[in-house]
Length: 105
Picture 1 (spheres, helix red, strand yellow):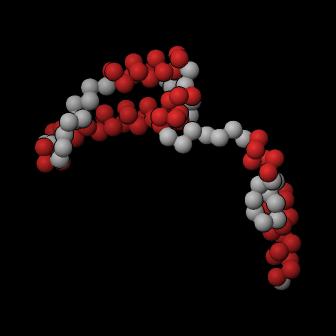
Picture 2: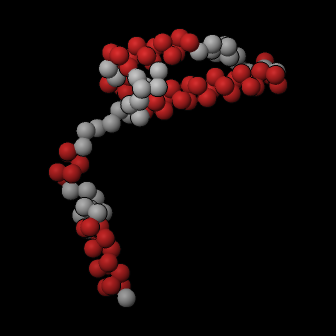
Picture 3: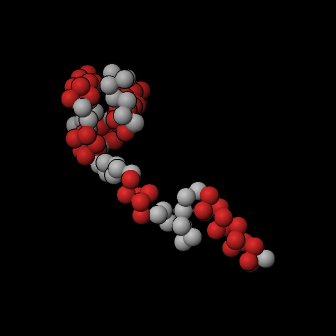
């Protein structure tokens, strides 16, 4: 019934720490520190050691395709190198996002 549904929803929300309207209580949201919304903001949160590791890892990337303006300037033989650079850059971003940049340097 509708009453059972509403009761079960309220119980489930309560068990997970939510208010009946589905929001977190003010004290729960205030306790969590805000997360950096951009890569630049996250970079400012990094320790000096992590920034050095990140800079070293970025400097080691060949960045062969940085100046390519169009896919028409690429050749099929370029794809393995392009994908490898992309994979390395994505790994750097994940490491920064998960605060493991210094661990994986």
